[in-house]
Image (cartoon, rainbow, N blue to C red; front, side, top):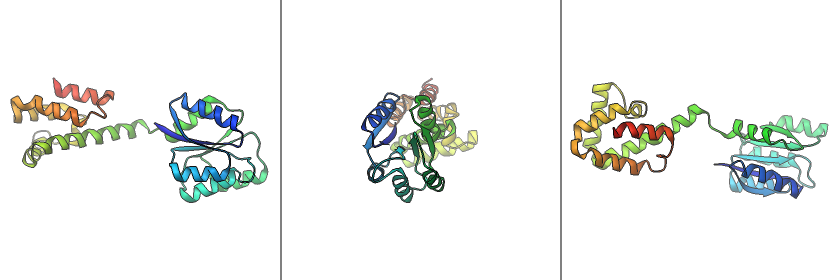
Length: 215
């Protein structure tokens, strides 16, 4: 889940903004009311994104984004404002806010901005699933023993010219080799693999992968 911080000197705005985010499955992990609190909360909570008002008394949004940029030049800092002075605009241009959202708040604009900055692309998400499945496969095979692991990897290369990682797209290759090698013990291997993939087995592409192994 995407984690966010909301900072504005108007407490009602912070509450409204937070409710909008949370009702759209974005977790608000921190709320602040000036630029100093923004910097402190960012350092403490390391959110995926922070929404920061510009005009605030004492420590304004310029102070906040300056400190955050010092901690992380690539932080996702979204500036919210209903007005901006020329000096503030010049300062922000140098500080490279990730986005600027004009108040009053537009829900669609907020969600589009969050998705653009924080949501992984389809390719990135698929690669993450592939990596996690490969790790589960390695753990399952290594539980059988290093010799068995090496034998499976060797046969994948010999028979199909592929690696263990390639099995995410070609689960039938792995199924054929495991069935040939382990015969009646194959269901036990599937049970072990299911346990090692329990955290990701609910995802559709992983379900499809496991379904092919089970046929």
